[in-house]
Amino acid sequence: MFYRPQDGHGLPHNPFNAIVTPRPIGWIATRGADGSENLAPYSFFNAVAYVPPQVMFASTSAKPDRDGTKDSVSNIRDTGVFCVNIVEYDMRDVMNQTSGPWDKEVDEFDLAGIERIECETIPCSRVAGAPASLECRLTQIVQLPGEANFVTFGEVTGVHLRDDCLVDGIFDVLRFNPLARMGYRDYTVVREKFSLNRPGE
Image (cartoon, rainbow, N blue to C red; front, side):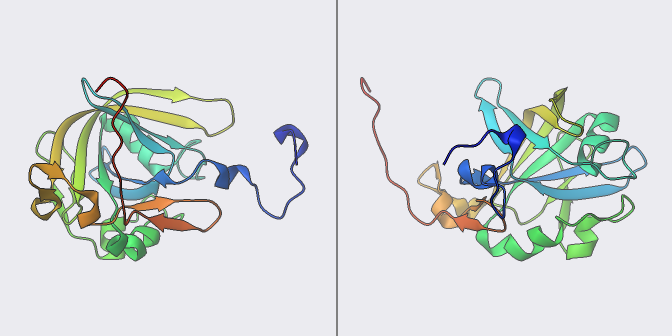
């Protein structure tokens, strides 16, 4: 099968959503200029640089109460900070609860009963029980083609690692089984790993 996205695919669901998988999930915590807090998962998320460490996430839809974007991007525009929390399998249901199109006044930490704790380097909350959290300062927001496509880049200024995830000096993802997004309503979980040496190493 071949199709041009501009012409449509003719399938019951968009196959593009399932092609680039699995995708890590960035559970983005933000605080508005008025002190209100937001927590929302994004599967267009990744690390993009080592030195200094940097991450990105993309928001691809809008809410009528947020001027062409969503709560996360709007808050980051105002404050210049955000925290990325890594989602473990055991947090799948509360993570999903925070993904709804809630009004900007809704605090998803409270909505889903998630314990929060203050970040160290930025004025923002983080998920207290997350396997890892990355405190970030905004470097740039890039608008992509399309009505509500915004990519937010941030430099990591603080890293929290849950003690039980450190094994012999290694951050061991098998200790918490990271959740990842596939297509449609599908998710997967990391339960095994293997190593490869690059040529010349």
